[in-house]
Image (cartoon, rainbow, N blue to C red; front, side, top):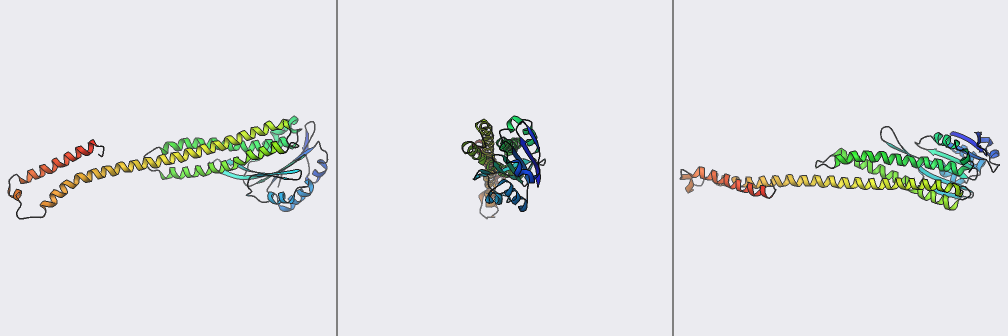
Length: 322
């Protein structure tokens, strides 16, 4: 359950700390603890509640996955839920959640479901000890930035797939597999949008209402996360609209092609009506039909039938029906 447990002190000093010693470490206002957890069980979270003085409702939410993205304040502690996403090698997008408990001198991240490790984030943050002296606000910024950057990577990857898919959509033939791919991409884009959209409001509240955790020096960093989240939302919405338009264009092209086929069938049907009527009339075997007795009756009838068919073919060809 415990992925990492570190205490950071002024001057860039940091070390691994046991969970039992956390309450002593955070007594100093200049220290802050960064604790990373993965799907902890209830007894462990109850211990964390006692160590950090967390609210029971926040603990209850942190133990339950499938929470909506949000930010809540419980006394001096902030509880944040964000959606995480990453693309597998097979092109599938896996979604998870990360819950954050943030106080003046601690940051707890609780991961649920599929997600990438935050170890690279922690290592990059430790390379800037002067920023870690700002407290847990900078560590939270690093994690939010890491999550939002993955949104952008996914939208960029989906954009490449959409470009290839558009070539299949702008055809007059109906492609069932292409339509299924469009539906899958639209659903994925909607999920990415719904994951990135709340991040803007979360950052906005952190900037406006929590100056004790995010001083003015850290606010430009949060605005950068806001900008990236907004960019991911706009990309997802624009590509979703592009796929909808491409789908409508494909259906229109298929309909036009079907109409052209119908017109041709109707034109040839009109031409075939002429010999059908003539030959069916002579097939009645009436006794008194003058042209039957004529030596030129047969060639004249055949010639007249072909001439009428030819004139009708010319007319339909001219009007674009054939």
